[in-house]
Length: 228
Image (cartoon, rainbow, N blue to C red; front, side):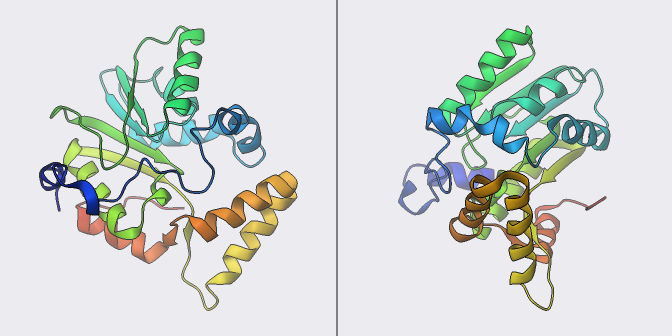
């Protein structure tokens, strides 16, 4: 199913996955958004993540970048310093409001915020130079991840790049051991809050296996350049 096919199904969306429905933590709740940066800072370095993504994408001052699942806008505002325009989308209006407030406070005028998701973005036929998605794709089941990746591929210009960062489980003798280890690590970093967050992630959300993700990327048309 390509982007055009998906648009046609919008006239009868009963069987199309509803990505506006929150799974895991409800990021339409102001309390969740208010604590997002502080809790994620316990296990993430937003600036380092942004530097790595920008270096991998070969952004230029003329580049247009699409950031999917922009959250509170940390990456979008840094990326905006390195390209002509950032289109920052998120399915949560509460997240978008927080991100827009940051942009206004920083005097950043080349970030365009839109309420949308992987399956509902409409870029009016404008191809982009690069796409980023950080800890967002796992909100979709695998079938709809595949649909989303094909849509992203069709949105990129020739030789455009996708930077994808998410929780992916490595294939191993014991599939559950890496998950248990990850949850223990999160608890050490952020106590009960991050432990419960990680438990809910694997119980209620849709992370997948590494070889499944690689297969979906390849089938969508992407060439895997690096992984970590």
